[in-house]
Length: 363
Image (cartoon, rainbow, N blue to C red; front, side):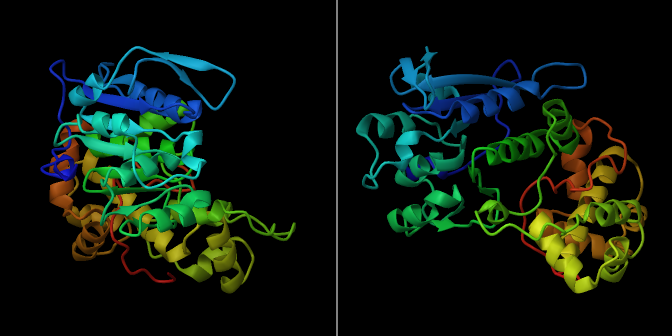
């Protein structure tokens, strides 16, 4: 199935202009993971209100599909839907937790073989087992639910499982961690296709953050923090309000009336990353918003986002997104709705796609 990963062309659209998303369900499917895809992609619309995606549900054999709850779902589409899809999403199933070998059932393997070259392929939670068993994750970076990580690493030693992230995107093959991380993954795909403004509108409509900082390590069961531990929300809100100027770790700690050492520890516990790394991501997001919705020069945007110089901003955007400011503006400017600068929560909102970490003070 290696040919399915070759020559991927993002944003291939159906004849009616909508991007076709096929959700492949299996017996024991988790309904929440299935409805995530329909809910989020179904809300993505143009400024004129036109739907940007068509989402269909399919199964290897159409008919009644058992869920992990006390009901079944009626699926009318078969593997033919996979051959027509621009994006294929595989939700998790309770059967992924059952002991078995590393191979797929022949019927499932045959269905996956119908996915056309160039289609984007994604899994939610333990659906990563299907992608890995199909050979689609070999040599790639991926993630899965932390409870399944040890088992999957044993089953698929050629896959680089990363539990420090909520989702991964390795050249059009995507995976997410737990079930709720499927929301982050779908928003990432919408953001990649149509820009941050549309993805943020979908997030608002679903009443979820445009992006959650940190990885799933913050959700792994561990001892509860001291009851007296305070939040870092006030410091993050202050930093976002002062993003246009240098922001120091000492100043952020002072907003919470604590030492820099204690603040850094609390920040990592709550956000899953360091204050310095978080600041860089917020500056990148501010720069992206300005590139999308204004005619400001690169120098002006660098100042407004707190990078100081255009050269510094170029380095950080390239490290985070893999593109230059001009390339980002050319890609997203024409496809995004206007968005008020600074719109977002103190938890921060992300760059449009995962990128390599860049050095940051305090990281």
